[in-house]
Length: 614
Image (cartoon, rainbow, N blue to C red; front, side):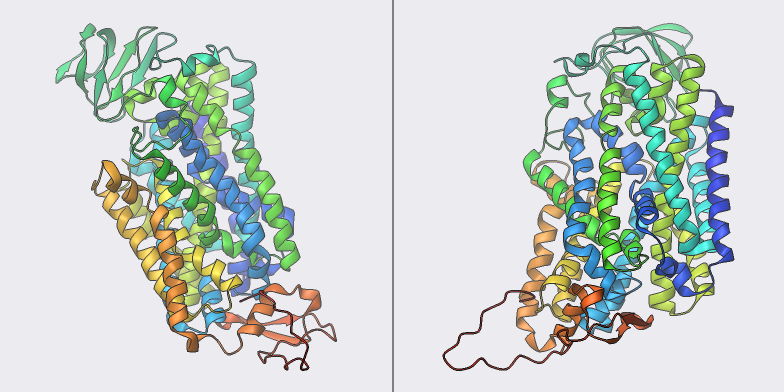
């Protein structure tokens, strides 16, 4: 690739991000500025910013890469990421904004009068945010490694530093404009190359991607190995190139027989046209029939695919409800109506975006099968323009996708770091802007160190695990907290610990390599299929066993959640968590916000039963 063009693209995105972030410093002075942008962000700008945060490295790089590696069943991630906002729109968006809190722990304490629950919720916020930051930094390391040949650690360190400085400088108000800008950049960086690669630049017939045999090199192709790999060759092939193959230096041509061959880091092999693409040992290159399967494949294999697919659907549908860096943005809307309008716009924006990754996976299978040999299918969005288009056209399109990739991990990393710093400064330190800056710096350093250790994991799988933790903890808490009046603090705490704890334990076990076959592989790698029902069940059962823990003013709280701002009783409602009072628009003759039961109806008349909040 033309490295100067890519360098210019990366530098431009980093500079614009830093300038827009620091620009927020001029107006970011209070905790409200740093955490919720003083609640004055209009719906279109906020929707663009939410989409910018939500469309992470998993959306830009990971979905296309996983779909190329495992098959079209991986597109269930894209469906779930988009559909999760429909659930958010219907269930959470407006009530959460009306409640008027800064963070999810604010909501938990304010709704259930449980400071203890608030402390545990803060820990979960930090856990989800930190876990979700790891794949963003993984994408950063992959991008700089693929484009510039830089060490993996360098990309992780550079992006971690840029994001930390931007957040510590401007907080939420400064980063809102950054997120909106980065969303439109990401959309253009996928849409423009995809349309050109599909319609203008020549490629093999699309039906070749689904033929029964594994994919082949459409033309003579050079494959560079950034790391040492053992590849499986299915048919003997004569290759040329340079580097070390099977512990001996490669000079000129060499015949690679069928079987395993060890390729040293830095080697470059040239495969002739028509050669079946080799795969990394332990993986398989899917045939067309396997690749077209609509179900999730784990590690390239169909292991109880229906259960795995449902696990992904549950995690992505409900995980969006529990992402702290997304939920905090609904507090930046002026009111609940604006929050609902914002969510509707987000559904439209992210749905348009998620039409594109599947196209890159399809074209990558045709034009960049060498990624199966290197195990770097996560980089298909970066490699495809150069593999399909030659010369200046390929370099320009490659620079565009590189800029989009940088935007992807910068934008999501920014929102996640705000959520982490906000939880630490507001819910633990309970101090102002200076504490926020210190928390941002400390969190940024910690997750950057963590990002150095996840280089071997798929970006999209890492994000799916973060969604599973969110779906198993905050998802049930928000749904039941908003819609079920009988939820208690002990019940919520039991579900939070049991659901979030078991999901985290399962994921750590999967990362350690436990349970790679059979049902253990599904239950550990896709835990939401059982941890989410466990969390709901724990919250309901424990709440039923602790009825005296129901807040005495539960009716007032639920009315505050569900009544539109214009039809509430007069007065000022205290904002949960100590964030200060928030004015409630007055309208006389509205049902008062009191917990008392209505008087009994006259004898002979039966009171109609309502199910709202029961």
